[in-house]
Figure 1 (cartoon, one colour):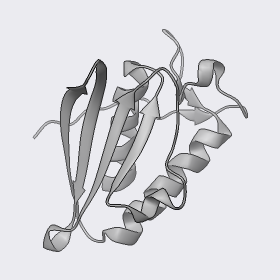
Figure 2 (figure 1 turned 180 degrees about the vertical axis):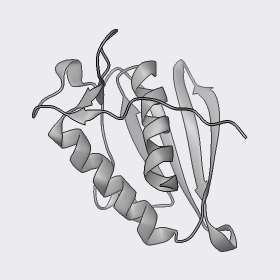
Figure 3 (figure 1 turned 30 degrees about the vertical axis):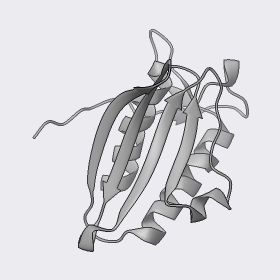
Figure 4 (figure 1 turned 90 degrees about the vertical axis):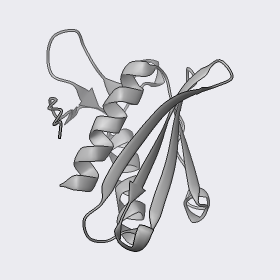
Length: 128
C-alpha cells in the first residue's frame, strides 16, 4: 500500500486567482478560497450520504478527446459506489445540487495541478 502525504491547504480569502481550485505556490503553503472549501464540504457530505463505513478509492486517469481526466470511484459496502469524473478544462465547475442526484458527478478544474491536488484532497476527506 502506498501513502501520499501533502500539505493540507489553508483557507485564505474569498477568491482564488485564475479560477483555480487550489492556490499552489512554488514555495509556501497551499491554499483555497472559502468557496472551494464550501464546494469540497458539499461534495464530502453527498459522498457520505450515499456511502457509509469504510470505502475504497480507485482512480483511472485517461483522456476524453484532448482533455486529461481522472475517473474516481469511491466504493463502500455492498458495492455501492460514487463515480466522479474530474476533467482539466481550463476553468472550474462543481456539480449543482440537482446533479448530485445523478450516478456520476462531473467536476472541471483549471489545470493538472488542481486535478492531482483534488484527488489527494478527496482521498483525505473520504478516508479520514
